[in-house]
Amino acid sequence: QVQLVESGGGMVQAGGSLRLSCAASGLTFSSYSMGWFRQGPGKEREFVAAITWSGRSTYYADSVKGRFTVSRDDAKNTVTLQMNSLKPEDTAVYYCAASLLAVDRALHRSNSYNYWGQGTQVTVSS
Image (cartoon, rainbow, N blue to C red; front, side, top):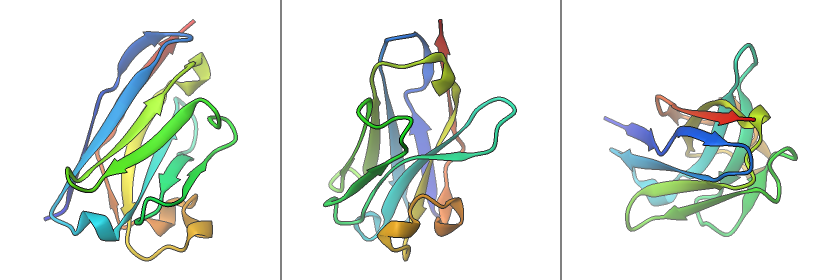
């Protein structure tokens, strides 16, 4: 049974930092590209960042580029999202997701992902 479990969410003031982690089990982690998505209050789920199965390429939404960094540790079956310079508009539930077959150009699409975590809340106060 595949499980993706996010952790590290919480409340932080604007300008602060948080580090989200996603622990994967039940799958061959090194074969999966990993993505982070978020859903703010009253908003649709949106792409945040992705890292390819090889770790060679990373992709970011324009809204987080330069502030967020995605990385992976295949030895620990984890993917991490380092979030700096947080803004109130970053407030959302953050989800990690695993994609087995998506090509790089499709990693921003939620329907490219096979498995999803339950999400972790990030709240940024002004």
